[in-house]
Length: 512
Image (tube, rainbow, N blue to C red; front, side):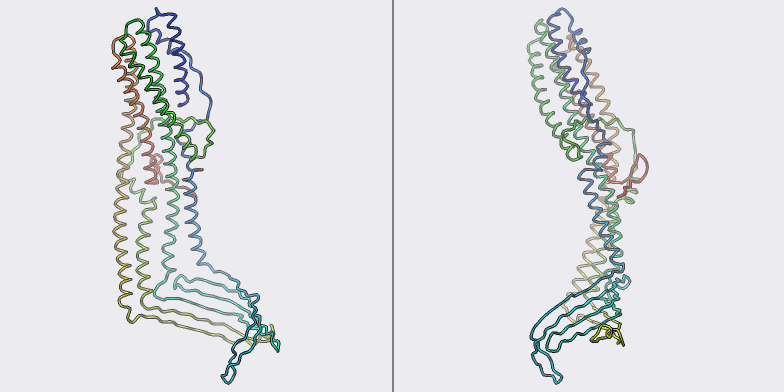
């Protein structure tokens, strides 16, 4: 549409000069007949190029723009964070080895009678172990099942080798019985992942909104340039026709000078408008991933069908689909976790460590696995503050104060969330009516300009009325395209805020 208008404006101006030469040869023809001949001159077709619609721009934005890659990378971060959390509750098999450790030094050696003698020691230690580790979510502890073999070689005066085997070993370790971080993570991590899923949909809708914004901004800039070009063609043609009338003495010189001034003003406006249109087009191509050298013609969106959405439905869908509601729950749960942590880690610390297994040592590999001996260990640690000068109490009160602050902030954010939905629904409800009025005003302004030009050519109205009709036609056309842009931006803004397709009457879902 844009390039057709530019081509028409260019051919229109060529036609004017042809008509001027013709009018000089046929000065006896009435001026209104010249104007009819002007409208009958042929227009060359525009060069073929890629046509881009609003839906095409949105599809590109959701497939290859920076907004898409941001959505993709953000989701992947949340996905792998959740996978890491789930893997932490699955058994892990680990291999531990020391192959080898060699040292030569003079060490103090305690003798049977308690005395100490310094001996030169030359040893090499090798060890190999395999363990199965399992986190216990119910208690917050860690269970280990393993086997291990160690060999020590002495290279002193009497060379010897010793083996120490631990065929089976069961161990359990728990740092605290009063605070279980694994239990809290089991509550929080699924919320983080659900938030990432909903955020992915929101980010893609944000990409759609940004694609629509780029498309409409470029379309507005190009239509403005087209309007300016058409205005220049009108001003130029009227100036040439008025110049002929001035030569016949039927028009005052002041009117001719005013039309010449209009031509100069229109040329300056056209240069600025074309620069703005080109800059906007390049910016859209760059963000949407379109080759800068590719010729692109924007297709003006048609007047949409009237669509309504109640505030109650919009709010219900937003609460079901948006990540904000999950974030509100997450923030409250995190505040509760901080209180539990402050109470659990700053009061009674009760730790448990236990081990049950078998061991044996021998000078040969086979002997290290015969006549196995029992191995047991249990340890209980207790740490309880007697006088901490209010440290524990202040940390708990700090966590509780933070929870109260979080609750106040969440309630305020919930009100802001609802208010944003309400205002956007109201704005969208007004946009269609404003668009319909702008379209009607554009049609009326075009008709008025056509009639005014005809009346001016026959001398029934003056230059002031003609200028006023030209300006109102420009303002009406710009007002329509601005209203069209505002409608579609409000449309996609409401989709992003609700994640609800109110044309298809269904929630918006994207498969990551």
